[in-house]
Image (cartoon, rainbow over all chains, first blue to last red; front, side):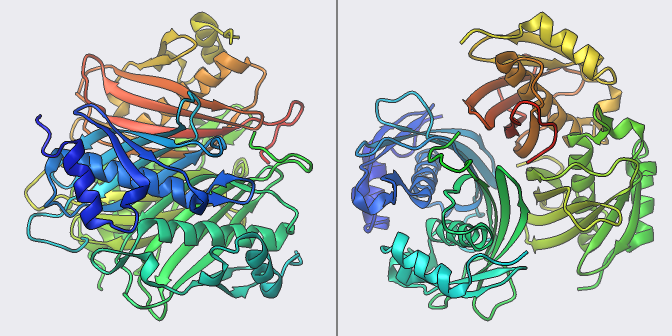
Length: 145
Length: 145
Length: 145
Length: 145
């Protein structure tokens, strides 16, 4: 399978469609087997205790899997998240970028399933792991089923 | 079981511990059977298509279940989210507050499980439903097991 | 919405399509708002420690939500489970039937979402709670997307 | 970390503690990085359409992650499943063994998290993927928290 969007095209897509958050994210890698999205952690992402908030981790996984799906099916798609299951396992390191590594497990006509592994840059241990399902509407449709 | 924190105490807790987001949330109801948290939807919560972003819905469920646990065990607790499974079912109404209704399904020594139902104010249909598990550390401990 | 299959029709469907397990299950109630499926617990369902096995609880939730969907869309449907998230909360009582109460949260063109609450008969406390998503293939299709 | 139970010890454990199902499962591999459990698919595991039933896949993942935890902490442990999120992605091949590959993502004092990937033997594509959380009670305790 050839990729329909590469690293650069995904970064431009982010800037155009998600201008409020695009600066936080850098597409480090976008290949057929995996995509890596980097979050530049910043005080807005922190919770008391100097830890990254749960919603920040969720958003990172959600955006990363979304981009990985787009890289395979192209930007015209209107995939919507229908389910996410996320395990929070360890506190991330403070003042360290987060790396989110994504694999697409299934890319069907109607559903796509991806998984995301989040680590502090330079660390082996997992901060969080998420599985996400996206509904891919038939062409021409814009609303959820 | 008597509540350890009522509506007012929870709202003050929010303001003290989560000053960045406390203004977004209003504790509408905090009882033994259920807690209702209201999110005043605002342009920062929106995604293209005039819809509320997934991370905003996740954050609403996470904060609401957290407050419901605190209302039962008190503010000294350092509960941390260990798992969340969330289903996104319908687009919320634009320009309408979101209401998140929480029930605690289990409150054990080490784990608490809660569920959250999110609707647009005044609507019956569900926007999203989440189940969350929190780890409750033994007193004196501050890190995840 | 009128039901397409009532209690009796669902029980017959079980017997015809799942003869190996149909005797274990009794459809106690099938209405528009909820369905209740009863499992006659038996030594085959037990694990060491006199507890009902996890797969038995999973199967009960899966069958119950499936029947609740069929009751609304009819028996010709070939819905397949695509996701399940289940929380196991308490040990069920030994030698006691299990009751599984189901509500359908969403019934879309392509996806249905239901939730299942499992209790020992006569008990208030939850044994387990599951959320399940089913993919409903377009008519004429028999495989997963 | 040295393993506390190897392949042979795990197989004996299965036979002693789960005599009803032990014959179905073979521990193909038990190492520090991963465990592989094989299910000899048989007519009892099938559903109409010649497909393996969801509860059979759930049970395979549950047993496999449980054994992987035991291999690391030893057989005296009384770990109980507290949560499972499973995605069913493709129909397995009929008349073919299923292989379940497990990795432990976190092994904490109180919680262990593992993930399971199920494939038909000899196939690359995933049949299902599950994440499971186990509660590990403090020594001497036998009930859930």
